[in-house]
Length: 284
Image 1 (cartoon, one colour):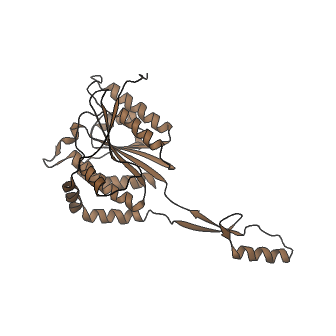
Image 2 (cartoon, helix red, strand yellow):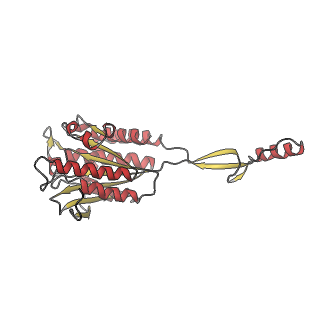
Image 3 (tube, helix red, strand yellow):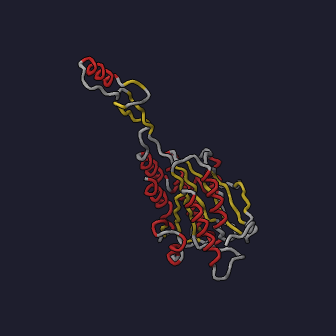
């Protein structure tokens, strides 16, 4: 059942930056970034395609017009296909990346990088790929501390230019509290519904199951709330995909997503390379 005015979501503009993290990421992944850019540039369609012999269009087709005049003088059947139409072929995709900023992402892998560090690396590489293909995208983060403090962080908004400030804010993403997904998904869905795009995609990056301090001990409430929030997004024609590094996710994700709408990353260290590959597969 729905509970009116049950949750309070607090939206915050991310202001913390960490330029050193950004520089270190591009130093480590410089060669891979170049490969990703080239790969995504190949996905860009031709800007304009001429379609000749059309019944309507932007300009006269001289060849079609000559054939029309010749046929008319010969008293043969004439065709009214005497125009050239310029078919504008462009990608029309808007994507929101919703990033888990719960405290569990602060744990280290092999005593080196934190899960959140690897998520940020993946986002920076993903941005480079998206700039090459010119898709619209936003980056949001989420956490929670009870139903009255669902936290939503705007790192990059749809339509906002990708510059050094945005890069610094991605580097400055840091872990907060619990994993309250439902309100964040609903808020990101509202943002996407306002986007002017034919294809709208919501990609969730997380390391665990939905959870918050005021949910039931068996965590059933948090999972069901997330499931319904995802169902609401689908009703708005938004395509959903979850990328998780939780090795136990197969126990609960099928209840929230269909089998085709999530992937479990066995080795979190591969996420920076895998995320652009997944995005390419989802949008081609």
